[in-house]
Length: 261
Image (cartoon, rainbow, N blue to C red; front, side, top):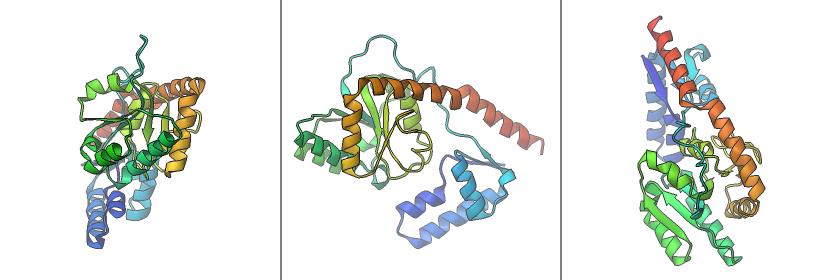
C-alpha cells in the first residue's frame, strides 16, 4: 500500500481548526495511515521531515514526489499578447490565502493613484466578503469563478504578474503553473512559497502584511526588465524540476519499488 498526500492533513487541521479534538483526530488518522503503508509519499522534503518528527516514521520509508506541471500546456505564448490584467490570483479564499491583505494593498495603491487590475480565478470568486470589499473600495477586480484547467494558460498569459499572498502553503500547484508560463510571480515569504521562489531570481518575495504586498506589486509592475528576467528563470526552473515526464518517472519508481517488496 502506498499512502500519498499533497499536503499534511494534520498540519492544515492544526492551523485551520480551533477544535483540539479535531486536531488530535487528524494526527491519529495520519499516523495510522503512514504506519500501515509500505511506502509513504509526500510532496516536499519539509513534509518528509515532519512525518519523521511527528509520527516517528522511518525516513527510509518515505519518498518525496512533488506536484507536476504539464509544461507543454502551461507555457509562455510566443505571439504578442495583450495584457488585460496587472495581476492574477488562482485559488480559493479563506484565512490561509490572506486575500484580505491583498485587497488592502490594492486599496493603498489606489490611494496613491495607482490603479491595479486584478483577475480572480477559482472558488475565491464566490467569497461575498471579498466582493463587498472590492465594491466598497471601488477596486478594479474581476471575478470569473472556476475555469477548465486547459483554459487557464490563456488567462495567465493575459496578466503581467501572478500573486500568491498566502500565510502558508504546501506545494502550491497554481504557483508552479504560473511560473511555467514565465509569469513574474509575487509570493509571500512563507513555507511552501519560499521553497520555490528565490527572491529576484525565480520570483519576488514579500511579507504577509498589506504594506509589503503593495510595495512588491509596485516594484514588479514598474520594472519590465525584472519581470522578464524572473519570468524566464521561473520557466527554466519548472522545466528542470517539475515537468510531467520527470515526476512520472518518480511515481513509477515508487510503484516498482512497492511491487518488489
